[in-house]
Length: 131
Image (tube, rainbow, N blue to C red; front, side, top):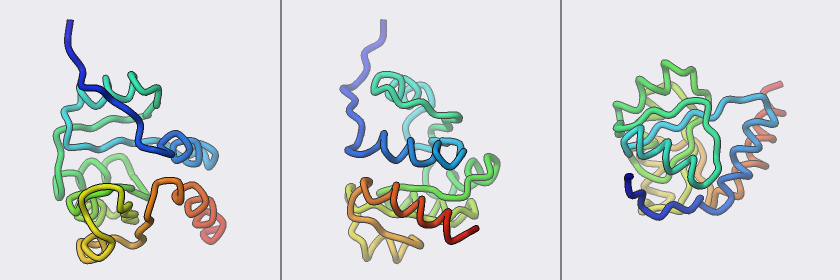
């Protein structure tokens, strides 16, 4: 038996995943957590990912993002923005973590949102603009 830390989904995480799925996208989780812990945490909160890549931070996230052909990467840390840029993905920063909007922009964010709930309408609008 293994103990899992208490996991709760970030507010609006399910809506963000649903928005990706509505556009026939894949949910690719690239995280600094170990792959096993990330998968267990996702299972526990009931969010299904197509791919989970763990134990990656900043630039090392980029290789995974590129390998899985990720178009848009959402994160709340400077390392996420660096990884997105390194991986060729559009970097979407969310100020729900330790970093300010200015810091996220400086680290390479293309877009900064104040909460994850802003992501679904942004993504749906982005898809419309690309068509």
